[in-house]
Image 1 (spheres, protein in one colour):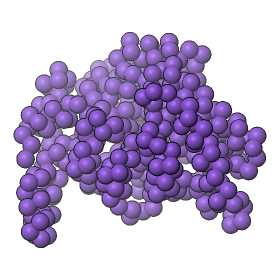
Image 2 (cartoon, rainbow, N blue to C red):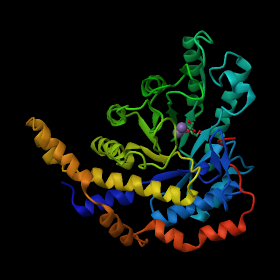
Image 3 (tube, rainbow, N blue to C red):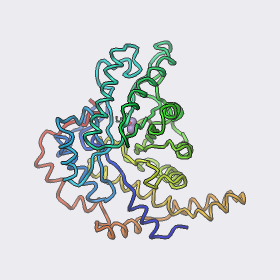
Image 4 (spheres, helix red, strand yellow):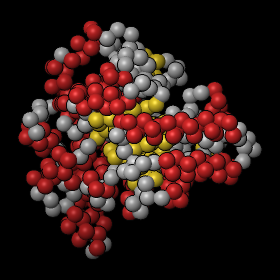
Length: 388
Ligand code: PSV
Ligand code: MN
Ligand code: MN
């Protein structure tokens, strides 16, 4: 079993990336609720991400979404981020918010629209060159609403063609992360609906194409940890988009709806060596805080990922293996549940104190006065991009 100092070492090394869109106003198709103090510019989103890192110590990068975070000079933005104490992380492409994309982007039956979508994806790689980002994250809203609307197989061919063109363009050290989602906005077929489809495309593309598992993108009851185990074993788990859900793609704070599921996922990550930075698994958050304050929402989520990771690291692997091999069903389950039931808050508090941080990041943030300052200084915050 790992010692406390080994566990702390791994927790200290874990990196959790926050999304720029979590800091802006968001909502549902019914209403976007404006909150006081939300960022008006990309730089202000970066400032807020830097707060999350300052108080948690494990969130040193922020993902961008293009065009929501479009600026003239990305190299200057990267420098700004460095000065603020964070890095620019994954570049998320957006080929779903133009009228042109009504029938799809890279799978659209119209070659003109496909070209436009591909050009945007290639532009995102140019941006990665300027920001120094490693990862291009691709999520496609493409799909159909009615049987017969378009040819399922042709759409797969178009998708493969676009992905290959983007893959070709990737520079040294850059990766493509293909994210799947069961449904929405398309309701009959989705062109990348599941991990199998994403995996098949990534396999065809090559080593630097990997799957992104968004925890909110499955059918209810899906065993996500099984998917994680299989992808890790195949060397194809590139990233997580963490969030939690009660019903569909709810984008709620990670670990809020089902902390046990989050634990089970992290158990497979640890088991498969996915915590080792060399494995290249990016731990990212993908959330919208519609009714809760944004920065605290992110701090809570980062801490929840850390808690689940700490519990997963506490699993007594030797005892578990022994119980499994001897067919001791209840004993094996006990070993896992023992770790899950452990209160890891004191351990995390100690770790944070050793890192020179307040043991309670949420309380420290709320005391800091930052929230009051931005509420007074920033008037007319921008919408995140969602829920318009
Ligand atoms: C849409 O479902 C989505 O939530 C995907 O998960 C993407 O990662 C995210 O939006 C940003 O494009
Ligand atoms: Mn996502
Ligand atoms: Mn989503």
